[in-house]
Image 1 (cartoon, helix red, strand yellow):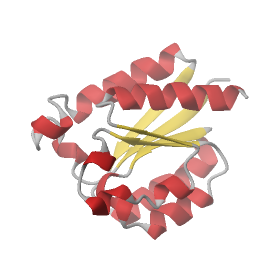
Image 2 (cartoon, rainbow, N blue to C red):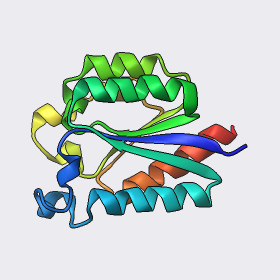
Image 3 (tube, rainbow, N blue to C red):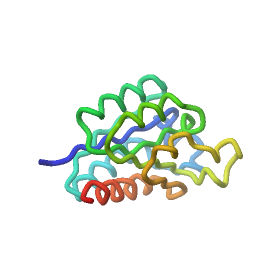
Length: 146
């Protein structure tokens, strides 16, 4: 049976390709969704791709993943640095979690250097552009095979 993985995206990622392209690149969220679907398929997985600007919706998406997903790739965006609620939801999820950031958060403002999500993540990928999603799915596939 094919394993389902959820790819979850936080606030402002719906503006990818339009918002600060010098930092985040020119690819759109649609391009990322296509990359994730193709990468997942090549790994024998199925990706379910979601984005929300609302913290509570992301928490609900994580709760839903408990019943349907083998693993989660998450780019929590700005909620990375603020959301204990997302951390708590991830702590209630039994599968592997990969945290992804398009930019290198460690080369940015100091408040971006702390991640609540990293306390739960099995791996963190930052600064690889949208390719980080593909790398995250590859790592997730490896963890699911172990």
